[in-house]
Image 1 (tube, one colour):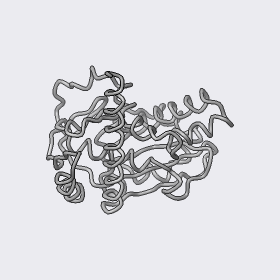
Image 2: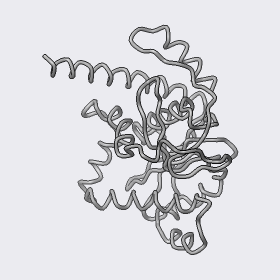
Image 3: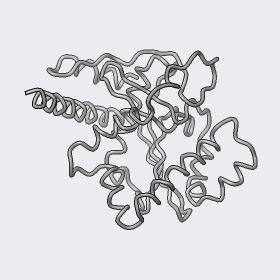
Image 4: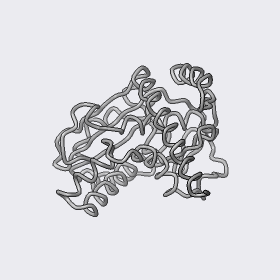
Amino acid sequence: MKAFQIICRQLRSSKGFSVEPALRVGFFTSSYSCGRKKKMNPYEEVNQEKYSNLVQSVLSFRGHAQTPESLFEEDTLLYGPVKIFLQGKRFHEDLESILSPQENLKERDENLESGYIKSVQHILKDVNGVRALESAVQHKTLKYGGLLDCVAEYQGKLCVIDWKTSEKPKPFIQNTFDNPLQVVAYMGAINQDANYSFQVQYGLIVVAYKDGSPAHSHFMDTELCSQYWTKWLLRLEEYTKKEKNQNIQKSD
């Protein structure tokens, strides 16, 4: 990805952060793959909970910054933490069964009864060529990892797709707080991860609503992804420095 490579070259010359350009890589995923015969998968035994928390930890460490976590806390005051968690988990499970090649007609009909799924129907019509679902990725150079929702083509462009649920309308990408940073973090990781044979240049955030009203989609082109990638690297560097200082203080 040219945009990522340009930023990587700039940051290699800056102090305190070493970044290698994204490489052309091979492919397989933790839950499902297509296009190539699957090798023995090292992600099958990976600590998925640890992976999913790493990117989130970087995004939320600033405390009172506006993040998906702070938004979650705001919604839990109204709807309860367990209910929101279960709804979001079911939504992702429904999407996985719909987008997976193993999906059957009975499961599809049952999934369509969900308000969240009805909300994203107009988006799903433009999604095809699924490459990965609920798949672990890691950036060995920058030492972070995560569990992405989906990699698929949206309107003919290969994207990292992040599916979100919300009780409040999110018509603009600014309303999604740090979600774009999460998307580009996964993009950077998958483009450097030797387990994937493709490069991703675009991102897509989809915000679904329980009442079935049309979901808002926020497409991220290469220029926008580059801007958020720079922000992500700065956030990651800040987080790394803070963790290092805390470890030094503990050892004293």
